Length: 413
Image (cartoon, rainbow, N blue to C red; front, side):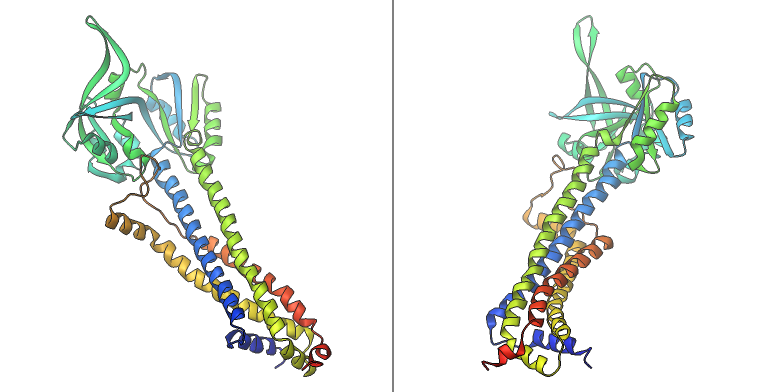
């Protein structure tokens, strides 16, 4: 019975209507502060996890894990691709010729990166085929002069499948009439939509057509590679280059997208740390609550001590009371945070549709919507830290309560 006494009295103190309403207000504030801190922390970390996941699955699904290029171009890309695929970490290889250009249609112009590809090989290193909204990559046959472009790029140009567009490349052609930029007429044969920045600045055409347009000396400019672990891309690329003869160079995704990925990771850690301070402040509000409760309950503590309660029992009473406030706040925050993390994408989509606004412009951000990805490991850390802070906040007031001397208190009663 004595072991249960701290729980029974501590829970009763939590439920009881106090004479001092200010103490009740401080208790409620502490509880709501924990609720808000835990909920916001879960929501923000879920959004940051969503950005991290979208960067890996979408942006890095379109960006090659690594590119192997030759200074004079690749003479026989089939032989080089077969050699590269023998590496244990290489899961796909595809040739490419890359050219910066300017598209023009119906008086609209837009710059884009145009890549000449082999459709069947490209499907093994890119997710573009899974995100085609019209047409197909298979339409990119040599000599067809077809082009597949991102949905945002097509919208900026005001074109759709079957429309004619003109591509201008930044290389001059010398003719008897003078020096003119190189132009070529293409037919839009497909549109893809990844929901990322590449939708507005990337287009594909066939490898043969791009070779003729860019006047590439070899069969391809280089080979795009996909690895089984993209976070080892730098080490794998270095290993591959060391195994090839001189004249080859490798560029992995960390050179083009690495800063963005590192920024997301750093922001996640910094924002998590800052929001954890909010949880800490809310948890330490429990200190002021319990200190006032201890002062208010001096007479009760003295009576309990005269009835045989030990200092340890008195400490247990106020630890239970403080933890009850903390646990209720954590559980409420946990429920609200999980609910928001699972629905925040739909909420933002509804707000954008109702108010006709766009929070994430794909011309500025690398995706056009708000992602969220709930990770139970983050929830475990948040709940564990919040509980630990709540427990630590109860120790000092409980220790003060255990030091109350019955004789000193009851002398004036």
